[in-house]
Amino acid sequence: MAGVGRFHDRPRSSACGRGPKRGLRNPALGWSRGGLTSKIHLACDGQGRPLAFVVTGGNINDCTRFMTVMEAIRVPRPGPGRPRIRPDHVLGDKGYSSRAIRTWLRRHGIAHTIPERADQVRNRVRLGGHGGRPPAFDREAYKHRNVVERCFNRLKQWRGIATRYDKTAQSYEAAVALASLLMWA
Image: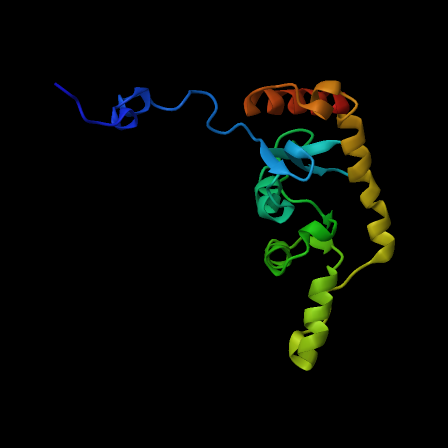
């Protein structure tokens, strides 16, 4: 008597109703040039104190999380009243240069200083009169963008944030939140 069949056609644990591992659905890790990394998208005030942040995988583009970070801003007012949710002015680097972001900021009445990327300048020049005018850019105001970089530097002084020892995204976000709170103290 001989049996004919292939071993790899038999149902195994994955076909027997076992689901994926719990807790690893959104680890906020992604492959980028440096390997498997995480990215902190951050908004801070003029004194370098974090207002809102979002943690994503390292392969997520900056401009895709801009609105999420901006909508997470909640600054309590001294005394009664609802929290402040809109900044007076936004300074961003070239990673945030897009028509959608500029439109969103204009629609919400927020002044902004974001430099235009080289490819956007080339496309505008190539289109000539139909390319539109360049967005306003204030060089003096942009000099204050280093406050954001200094905020990141202070956050990364925490070794756990700089090296991401945490396995889950929730633990890493909690560490960033704790460091942010201590920066306000």
